[in-house]
Image (tube, rainbow, N blue to C red; front, side):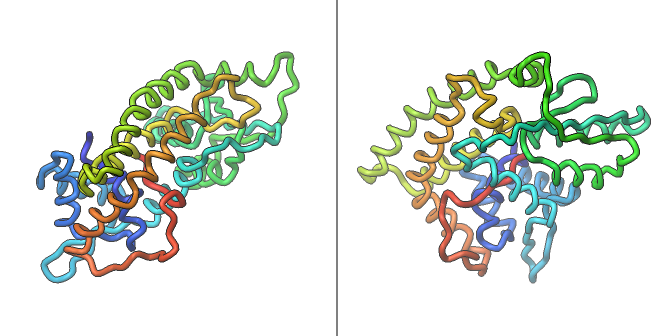
Length: 291
């Protein structure tokens, strides 16, 4: 597992709920559980710092890293999707985003495409992206972020035919492929869930092992944010496996949550004096970074 990607997972699933700041030594110790060494962790966090996801702070001879406003915002966006078990009701309208970005700034165009996919847009045709979800704020945030107002147009409208709405879905997303990914996740993790649940109940699984398995679970499940657009129930096929996978993730996560958090807190306290920011914190009521 990529070191930088793992750090994002740890920030979202753990660190952001403890003041969003961690000593580099604690981060190195946590990632050593997954085979990442000192050098790879320092290189990855340095890269994240340069990209504006985290910021550094020196206290005495210790270096601490905390989420920037940009990093925290991405976590909050992910939270609304990752722990949502039931698709939202559809208002019957499509959000249509079109652009003609010149070749001179193609790097902006490439970054924009990644952001659109992350937000849940699908490509209906070249430079025409659609979503059934209320993403107005995200769209205008992207326009402002990249300064592309003169190159884009945004519409909210209903599809008048001559086909059904599902035709737009089929042209913009490969739901069979996404469903196959959900099936693979369910096949692998339903068995792991039963085994780990029994081991935890018998006291045969350490806090460190629970931490590793919970982090791996989150790390794997978060990948669906890049492939599943989070379509409303009305636009999903009859045998959609997304809700089944979400329920499995929720149950497995709950089983691992308490011992995993104990291990994290033990390591975290070695270099941090920050207390948990929410005493009424619910383990299924928080986000994590996706990158």
